Length: 393
Image (cartoon, rainbow, N blue to C red; front, side, top):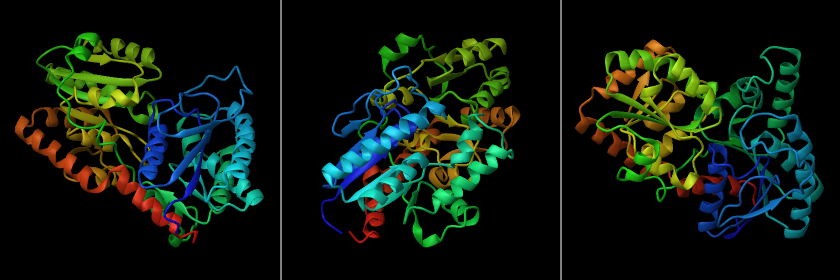
């Protein structure tokens, strides 16, 4: 493999919009650049430009489209058509060594552009295409449309010569459900930016800004406010938590649907036990996480869970659902919820909150070390380079 590669990443999303998928793409690009490679990203015309990474955008062909949140949209098919052309044009001009397609749309675009340019491509798979559409309630599982899209996903997964996954359970799914050969799949895991995500002193300006109460045990959630992320489940568990321990307070940072969940909390009578922030900048996320004593994620679908890396890098013990994906990353430094019910969640929250502070601190420190040793973006980039080597460039 060349010491220095020109890698054209394809991001069929409004990059950058301060959410998990975008953080992953951005940090991968930066880590590869630090290792001497040249990176460019083709993406939609909306989203904010990020420092250090060259971004090539499609024309403003849909001025009515302003959606920054995740999830399917019919307009995206229209935008992806122009992203094919923009990526092809950049590939012809810049002559990259590799096309790196993110998400299934990026895989399709990479395959098409590769056919017309001869540039080899790889697929960076972050989740199931049909699984995401079902999770966002765009279609129902088992229907005619679902079955058609599942067949399409199975066909598409077989186009790239190599696929990168972010958990070994995703690799297993590709082998067992989609019938892919193990030799074409490499698990690269996610990483975290240790400069942005580390234990901060509690930011008094943020505490004043949001009116965060004093002398409480803080459970922090940072991420998307969606049902599939377990936000409904979390809020439904809070009445049982505060009934038994009113000294627990929840910090919920993120977007969208803030008003929906604020109203849900008020209807359940626990609005005073939750602080909502709304959308925050990625660069500030570590300071927000560090306001908590314990971090929580109740993501319902068993797929990659990028929050874990940032939570652990900030030195917090984790509460998470008991599944292979979470245990693979968190190890012994978390509290595991045995089932997706408010009763089970509240029980584990109460258990974690009653754990002595020195034990929680040791768990947090151990989790931080685990991230430093295994899950930095530089280590992720190393694993990505091994996939690039398979292309014999």
